[in-house]
Amino acid sequence: MSSFIKTNRLVAAVVFALSFLGYFTTVSPTLSYWDCGEFAACAYSLGIPHPPGSPLFLIVGRLFSMLPISEIGFHLGLAVSDYDIAFKVNLISVLASAFAVLFVHLIIVRMLLQWKGRPADTFGSLKITLAAALGALTFAFTYSHWFNAVEAEVYASSTFFTTIVVWLIMVWLEKPDDLHSDVYLLLIAYMIGLAIGVHLLNVLTLPFIFFIIYSKKFDINAVSFAKFIVVGLLAVGVIYKAFLFYTLNIPKFFDGFGMATVSVLLFFGLLFYLTYYMVRENKHTGALIVIGTLLIFVGYSTYAMIMIRSGMNPNIDQNDPDTWASFIKYMNREQYGDFSVWPRIAPFWDYQVNKMFVRYFNWQFVGRPDEVGLSIIDHLRNTIGLTVDTLKDTQEDRYGYMSTILSWRGLYGLPFLAGLIGAAHHFNRDWKRALAVLGLFVATGIAIII
Image (tube, rainbow, N blue to C red; front, side):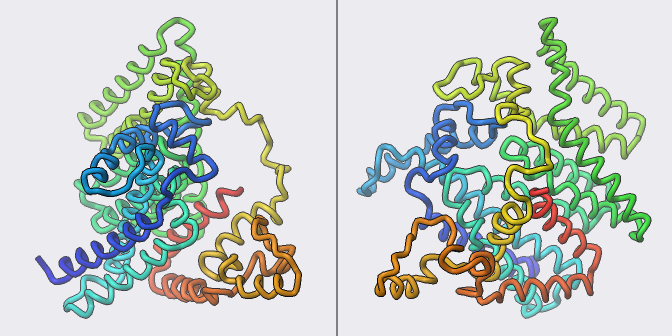
C-alpha cells in the first residue's frame, strides 16, 4: 500500500472521529423544536408525517428507535432513561453528518489529486490530506451543519446523500472513458432515488453532475455552455416533475379500473424490457439512461411505505394518503394551498435573501452577533438599566440592521476571505471544476430561494 493511501486513510479516520465525537457529545438528549418531535414519533410508530413525507428516514429511524441503548446503559451502571426514543432517532443525524464530513474530505482529496497528481513523498501526501481535512472540519462545525447534526431532522441525512453523489462523480471523473466507470453513474442514479425518500434537496446536485459529465465529453465555449444550461435545466425539470409527480398519474388513472397495482408492475416491467433491449442491441447511451431511470424509481419506491402504513391507520396519519388520489394530493403538498412564485408572501430581498440566506451565510463564514459573543455588552446594558431581551429572534432592534446581517465578531471574516482566495485560485488553475463547484453552491443556496 502506498504512503499516500495510508496517510489519507489515517487522516480521513481522524476527520470522521473528530466530527462524530463533536456531534455525539452535543447531541440533543431528547426532542428539539420544529419537526423533530413529529419525525421521532413517526419513526417509532411508522406513522405518516406532514407532506411530502420522508419514508426512508422513517424506516431507518424505526431501526434506530429499537437500539438497546437503555439495556446496555443499565448493565454498564449508567443512568439512562427508558424514554430515550428521541435520542436514538437523533443519532441518525449524528452518524449521517459525520459521514458527510468524511465524504467532503474525500471529495477535496480527489479534486486536489486531479489537479496536482499523486504526491511522490510523505510531505506531499500530508499537504493534500491535511488541506482536505481543514476544509472538511471547517464544514463540520459550520453553524447550519452542526445544528442539523444533533437533532432528528432530515437535513443531515440529505447532506449525507449529497456528499456521496458528489464524491461518486469525482471518482467517475478520473476514468470517464472506461465502460466499467458507468457503475458510478448508475450508483448516482440510485442514490438520488433513495435521497428523494429523505428530502428533495439532492435533486439540486443534478446540474453539478451534468456539468461535470458535459465538460469532460465536450469542449466548453459560450455556445456549448448555453446549450448545456438549456439541456441541463430541462433534464432537472423532467426528473423533478415527470419522474416524481407526473408518473403517479398512471396508477391513479388505472385505479378507476381497479388495476393500479398492475399498472405499477407493468411500468417496472417496461423498464426492465427496455433495459434488456438496449443491452441486446448494444445501445450504450440508451442502456445507461434506461437503467439509471429504473434505479431512480427503485430508490424512489420507499414512498410505497407511505400508502402501506396509511392503510393501516397508525396513530399519526396526516392527510390519510391510503388511496392513489389522496396520495397524489399528499405528494403535491395540496394541504398548503396553491401560491404563485411571484409575488411572495414574505418580501423576497429583505427577508428571503438577506435575512434567511445572507445572514446565515455570514454567521458561518464571517461572524455572528450571538448571545455569547455579546454577553459583555449585554451585561453592561443591564448594569445601567437597559434590559436585554435574550429571547428575541433578531438583534436588529439592539444592534442595528448591519450588525444583524453582517458581524465580524468571533470569526473576523477569515473563513470568508480564505474562501474567496481559494475560489480565485481554483478558477485560475482549473476553471471547469471551479465553475461546477460554483454551480453546486448556487444551486443549493440562492437557487433554492428562487
